[in-house]
Length: 337
Image: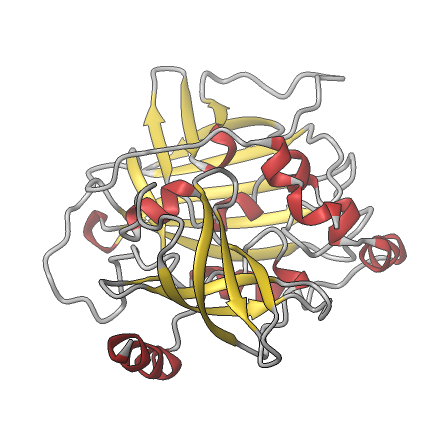
C-alpha cells in the first residue's frame, strides 16, 4: 500500500495523459482527475477499447463499480500491457478522467497501479524531440511509421479554428457523440484525420500502386500510381479513390469519391460531403527517420476555405503491425447508457 501511495504522488506530478483522439473523449471531463483505490472485478481485452471494472468503497461505505475505458490492444501492447496485466481480485490505484455525466461511474484511464507496476496508455512512443540516440533510417517511404506522442494536438487545435460554412456550423451543433459517433459503429476515419491516428501505419510500394495500412479497424488504402485518372461516377467509399504520382522523391496523392461521413475528424461532429477532396504530399526527411505529409482538405459544403497542415510520422521498424478487429458491441458500449 505504501508503494501505491508513493506511485500516485509521483504520477500526479508526472502529467501522464491519454490521447485527445479517443473516440468518446468529449464525454469526459479533462479538467479533473478522479483517484480511487479498489479491486478489479473484470478486465476485458477487446477492441476498439479495453475496459477495466473496479469496485471501490465510497466515503459512506457504499460499494460501487467503476467502468474505466482505455485504448485498443495494439497501443496497450506497445505500452507494456498484456491480456494478463490485470486479473479479478487485484488491488489497484486508478487515476482517470470522469464522465461529464456525474451520475455515471465511467471514466477514461490516465494510469492504473498495482503493487508491481504502473500502467498507462500510449507510453510506447520512442521518438522524442530530445532523443539523441541513433535511429533506424528508411531509404524510401515504405515501412512502418508511428505518430509522435503529442503530434495529434497540433492537428486538433488547428481543426478547432477551421472556418465553417453555415452547414458545417449546423452539423457541428447537431452532433452528439453518444448517438452520432461513426466509430461506435466500427466505421473508420478517412484522410486527413487518419494521418494523426496513434496506431501504426505501414507503407508498401508495389509496381503500380502503393498500399497504406493502418492498424485501427485494419484499414487498407490503395493509391494507384499506374497513370489512371479518377473514374467518372465512381463508387464512393470510406477511404475514397486515390491516385498518385512521383515528383522526384515526393509522392503526391489526390483523393476524391469519399462517401459521406458524420464525423471524419474524431469527435468534432463536422460532417464531410460529396465534394470532399484531399491532396497529400509524402516526403522523406531527417535522414530517413521522418515522413512528412503535407495535406490540403477541401470540402466546400462544410468548410469556407481549405484546411491545410503537415503531419510527421517517425520510422518505427522495431514495431510489428498488430491491427485489430472492431467488436461492434464493444465499440458502441459507451453510447448505450
